[in-house]
Image (cartoon, rainbow, N blue to C red):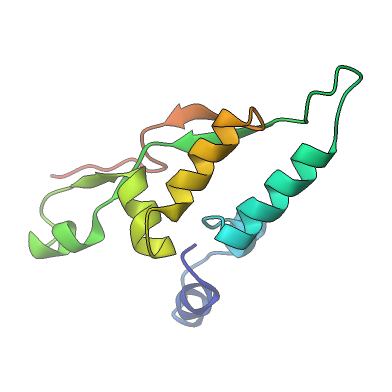
Length: 125
C-alpha cells in the first residue's frame, strides 16, 4: 500500500481491501522509510548473542514491481515491471533506501531473501 491516502481512496471507492486477512496487510504493508530502517538497524545492532554477534532480520523481498506509468502509457494492454531499487527510489525519494539495505547487509544485520519476482499474477488476453 503506497500510502494511507491510497488506502482510504480504495476503501471509499468500494474496493474490498479489508476482507479476511487483507486489512491486516493492506493497513500495515508498505515500503520502510529511512526512519523505519534506521530504528530497526539500531535495535538489531544493540541485541548481541554470547559471541557478540548482532541480531539479524531476514527480509523477504520481491525483486520487481509493476511499472504503472509504462502500463498506463500502453493503455493497459501490456505489462511492464521495474526493478525494486527503482521503486524504492521513486517512493522514498532517492537511492538512500537501497544504500541502507547495503549497509545492513555489510553489518550482517539485514539479510534479504528472494520471495518472488512480483506479488501479482497478470494475464494479457
